[in-house]
Every structure is written in C-alpha cells, then in structure tokens.
Length: 312
Image 1: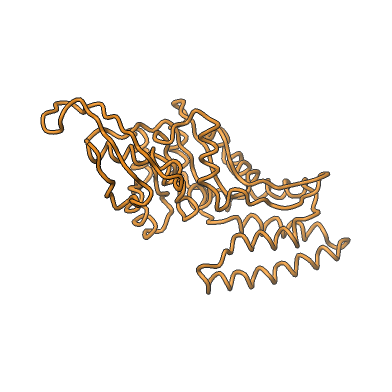
Image 2: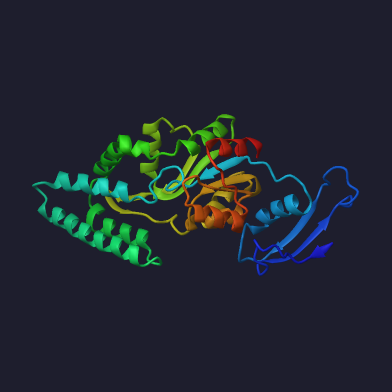
C-alpha cells in the first residue's frame, strides 16, 4: 500500500512516499505484525525517517514504540535551573576583576566597560524577542573580559562557583536521579549543551554526579599558551548537526534514543529522536507546544519521568 503522509505533526513537504508491507490485515490480526517501512525523505530533514517510522508504527498499526536504549540531556533549563551561562560568566568576571586589583588597571577598566555593555544588552533582550542575546553576551565577555586571562584563573573560578551552595541548589534532582538510575542499569547517558563544558563537569563533580553521564558534548574555552582566547559557540544553534554527527560516530540508534530539552535550541533534536521529552522546568506553553508539535512526553514530576524511562 502507498499513501502520502498527512500527519499534521510532520510537514508533507519533507515526506514523499511511504510503502508498507505486512503479513496480515489490520482487521484479522491477533498480534502486532512485523511491519516493514520503506521511507523516502528529502535531504532537507536528515534523521526525519527514523522519527516518522516510530510514529507510524505506534499510531497507525498499534505496534509498540522502539524501546529507549540511551538518554541525552540538555543542560541549561533541563538539569540546572539557569537558562543560560550568565551566572557563571558573571562569577568569572568578578573573580578576574578582583585578581586585577590594583596591579592591572587596564584590564579592570575593560571589565567595567563590559558590564556597562552587558546592561544595555539585557535591556535590549527584554524589548526585542528576536535579539540573539546569548551570542552577543558571549561576544562581550570574550572581547573585554576573558581574552588573555590565564586558563588556570578561569578554572579556579569555575570550581569555586560549582561548589557554592546556591549553584548546587539549582540542580534539578527530579531529572538527575531518574537519569542516574537509567545509567546504573548499563544504558548510555550523555549531555549535549551550548554551555561551558568544564563548568558543567565541575558542577556535576561537586554534586557527586560525575559518574551519571558517559559523555558531555558542550562548548569549550579556546586557549593558547595557557591563556584564554574565547568561549566557543560551536554547539549553540547547531544541536541537530552535532547530534547527527554523534549518532554517526557511535552505535546509538536515533529511534531508540531519548532527548530531554526545554528550548528552541533543542527542537532539531526532538525531530530526530524516537523519545522526545520536555524538561520539568520548561514553561507550560513550551510543554504544550512540543507535546503537540513533536508528540513529546511531558512528565508531571520525578516519578512520572522515572516510570516513563523504565517502561520505554
């Protein structure tokens, strides 16, 4: 049988034809048949075939979704309450400023100028929803604060920030604990984030959760000769591409992968995986939108998430 995909959650422009062959008819079967799908997808959406396959099997034929064999989590807004890296960057800037007193007046002046620029950026972000605040924030920090600072200073500041009680209180154990339980039974877990990788690992280490994840794909601090050059933004705005590359380099199957996220930057990942999950900290309107758009699971609480991962 052949038909065009009319599922409103998948734009027909990307889906061409689906051919299904089955050994029994839907009306007379007594057990779910083995369904073979041949899916032709335009090059515009790599990875869409896997997501569509699982959706068709579960909704059109009553076959159970592919089991979940691995979990990848976003960081900001998913595992930690902070929606971006501003609190960490502010802490680093304060420590760098203190280290400059009184012997590095030029660098002190640059940091004060950076703070003035950042205040204007914050105000613009509140006025203009389309303004890319995160990219501009990193640009100011890189140009006026971070460049030329010894990497050892940065790491020392991050380690102190990670150990603070206030930072640790922002971790969402409602997500961390179910993911850790999933990992304890031998299933792979990882983090995919546009945040600072060393900072993520330091916070997890300070919380005693450094063993909860097998890998952390996050942005790095570029350095040369022991001095910082800039915080990279290779993952921000490119999560789907990074995830596809990760899938190609590992034995993970997208249809058996769960991804937990909370923002527009995670949408490309929701399109690819078989088990999209919206974080517990996401705003209600975001939960509703992604549940409708990607058929994402929206857990009500920690137990709900843990039960879903056990069943998946």
